[in-house]
Length: 406
Image (cartoon, rainbow, N blue to C red; front, side, top):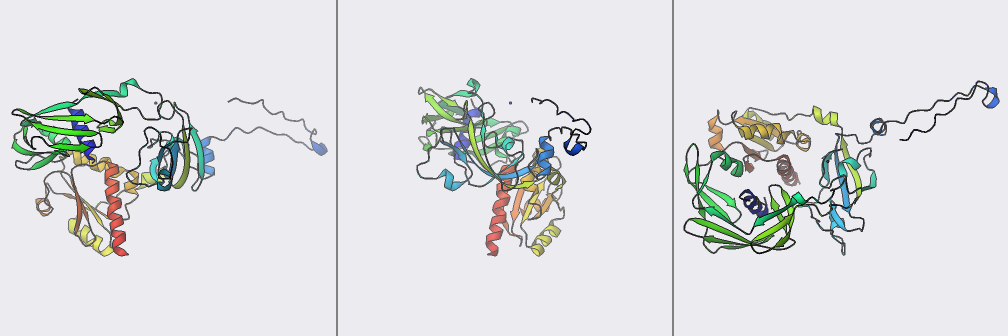
């Protein structure tokens, strides 16, 4: 998670035919050569049926696409293609954001996409086809919404020490509070758990008076006072600002507050798309895919070693709602299920089999352990993660394994 996202989240938490005339049937004998030549009109083929017959994309199919989105003046909004996004002299539109990693986008046809309209534009396309389409403003980002313009204070204070209810602690840090353990409250602000009761977690901040940090959105200064900690931001106009609701641009400041516009830069403007369909997986195929979980720890590691495949292991507890969310949502992602044959999947109830909790130094639930085929731990994720983050971690594990074979 970026530092600006952490701080933004902390800062914010404390702040939608004509029908032609029917063809006439010539009378018998009225056709050429005196033959009967009766004709009937044929109803237009539904788009869904046409898509099936030509092998095209239907709603709900899972697709991979490369695309570039521009405004009508040619200024760039977004591209999955690095040489397009970084072409010399290319003009960037307001709201342009470069991907963290250039790669084809995966999405459900007819569904949401990074740039609104892509999901609808791929309907009917065939693999390898390239297409140019203009998305009207009302179907792209729509008009500017005044409700998406927010005002934030430049200074916020945090009591010293800070009290949190246990459920909020777990939601923020994805782990259970343990006395003496440190947590990253913000990129520049660590805290230590001082006391834990049934109803309260007490945190002491580990920070120095006068600390100063340069962030993407401006300058952050920290002042430690007797009863609290004051965090002051000097915002940079035009800079991106992230909160748990999304990302906006800092539009103005009066020194006491700053205004962030969360409307997309395309608000009120049509978007031009150039799309290439790279792959297509039918909805019916995806629905039939299931991750082949193994529940025997040693058996799973033995299979991984024999097959030469990396391991994904989840240590969970039956009572853990975050564990249920991980299995029922994140691991149901089509992109993850399509990796089912690339690795060995193990899930272990470490609440019942506590030797594994100790073996993998587990502090909270769930714990995701990524392992090499020989059983060496490659990485861990402590707590719940969304599907996108999980998929990226799995792809890194696969890439790492592929490089080790070359």
